[in-house]
Length: 145
Image 1: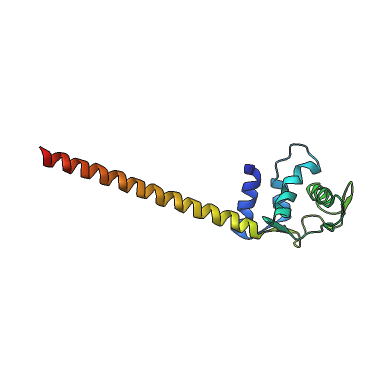
Image 2: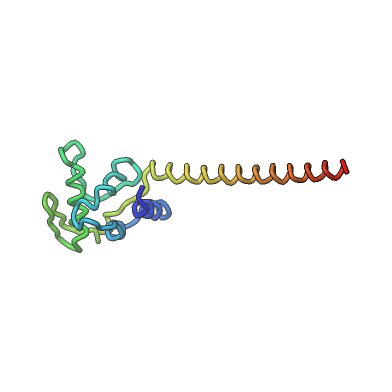
């Protein structure tokens, strides 16, 4: 996962929800159009985050593209905006439009935390084993002299 999206996911995870305007404005824009929002839509589709704003019916063809068009509208500023297939009456400044942490997002961070604990415990046991071997070797060397 690209660090920009990991940072967005982390910010949403820490506060449970983040206003859409904050998320949309923090997305790294390399194309300057709707294509910049496909990874954000992928996070929504995978269940890492949820979205409370207007979204097309998932059974419609090209629903993901329509959602990226909506996010592009939000990025264009407050108020009514239009971009290709999307028109938003109230922009992302609306309090009703936000991103929230999804079940996969929680699982991602809990697994990461668990893995970090395992690494620390493993490192502690390795250090303890190394010190124990060194002390026993030193004592055995001292007793044979």
